[in-house]
Amino acid sequence: MNSKNLTRNILIGMTLGAIVGIIINIVGPDTSGLSVLVKDIFPLVGSIFVRSLQLLVVPLVLLSLICGTSALDDVRRLGRIGFKTVAFYMATTAIAISIAISLAVIFKPGSGMQLDYETNFVAKESPPLTDVILNIFPKNPFAAMAEGNMLQVIVFAILFGLAATLVGPPGRRVIALANDLNDIVMKLVMLLLMAAPFGVFALVARTFAKEGFSAILALSQYFFLVLAALAIHAFVAYGLIFKTFTGLSVKQLYRNLRKVQIFAFSTASSNATIPINLENAEHRLGVKPAVASFTIPLGATINMDGTAIMQGVATVFIAQALGVDIGLQGYLMVVLTATLASIGTAGVPGVGLIMLAMVFQQVGLPVAAIGVIYGVDRLLDMARTAVNVTGDAVVSVIVAKSEGEFDQEVFDAKK
Ligand code: ASP
Image (cartoon, rainbow, N blue to C red):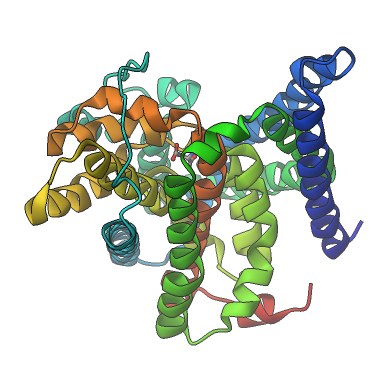
């Protein structure tokens, strides 16, 4: 199957999944016969698919980063790429959350709502900021890999790649082996992609079948405002930033990103999407491995613009509903904490809501009120994850282009 047909089939899988899921939701997911599908078959197929993606994350990040680091001729370039990438990630997140807060302040989704936040929601403890920083430094590379601690795996792989480059002939042998192994794991990603239409179908069908659409109706102002902010950021803000810094076609960017966005949407996990985003960055966006191997996994770990948008709207929404005025200082605090929280948010489903507790605490809102929006979070999680991975890809192209690590022919190719 060529890659154009594959993307088409994945899109069909997602659409059919949504249609079947909504039909089941209307008929009743507990109806006999259907409940087997919703409770057993869809989750089984979906989980097998997500696990297979997760299986590849650690080996792929490790190997591609070792290869990527060693492909850079100069250690100083690594520092420059790192600095640029982190700066773009932080800046785009701050822009995202500013869009979110502005929309929420203008449209006041929470005013006039009677909020009863005596919910059963118990916030999980969000980690203190010092832990978030300390957590970057690995103490045991094998433990980091076993736990899937991506920041630590990234740090270890870069150090290993650097040392391998510096050590001479033995390093060259190891790097050659790492390149071969990397090709094998990449091939596995491509093979897994063949099963993607089915995996995507099962994941989307299950979520839509189980989702409480009445909850969305009750919170429609919040729900649709988050979606609007996500759309504005994804299409207008990224579009402008991308055009300004690369001069490339935004339309082509989106065409090349469709597959990755569908994966992120159906899995609601930036982490599980790393293999696809990495493969796509190299083979469709034209980002050379030296940059993509670093920017994509790092972005999946620390760059969460969609998550920050949800946190911005949620904070203003709850404050309005409770009649609390958090003031300009409060809004600035939201921008700061949500940007930091998005760094600490792991790229797995639902974590954004846990980190929201940190933002609420900073601005003095009751953490229990998060329970109010809990019921509508799954669909928003899917949408924001699609935005999260889009941001990673956009910044990857910008950094690659500025570093001469970009292949225009690959980007422009009709797929
Ligand atoms: N699911 C999101 C991600 O993986 C994180 C979140 O917002 O919960 O990117």
